[in-house]
Image 1 (cartoon, rainbow, N blue to C red):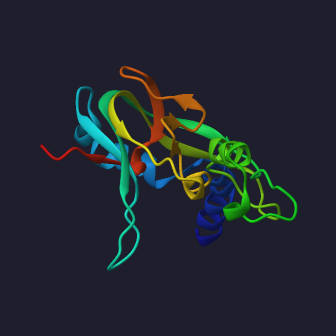
Image 2: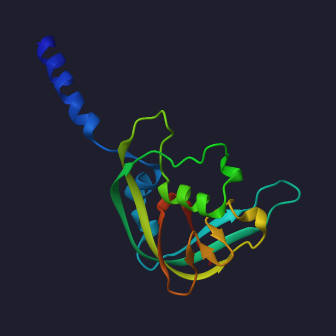
Image 3: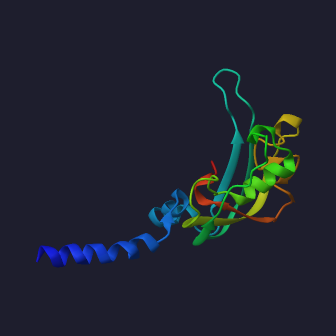
Length: 166
């Protein structure tokens, strides 16, 4: 009997390994789908670092159009030889951000389930200083390489969003 149980467990391992891993964004959509229902006001924020002298907080606010869990191939992160992420140009940073989530050169590529939320933009505040060029997705009136405008639709991972303060 123990041998049958062992063989059954051994045979089920490939089936479990084939199931894409759940990212935190996908778990959020499964555990609390009511938080990201259509019409909900959400905000994406960057900045605010520091204890005494805090950096400004930049944001993008909008309304949820749709949220879903997608299976996505997580490939290798693009690398710019001889540069750290802080040294990337805006174009290099955008390429890296669009590839995210991604894995390092020595990690195996894989499939993962990601919670994606499509939002309709209603309001934003973006940094304009040169040092913010590769610090985040928001920069000089753009979200990555898209010019921000009212009613623009963008997609973000669910765990990057917070609820608007009413």
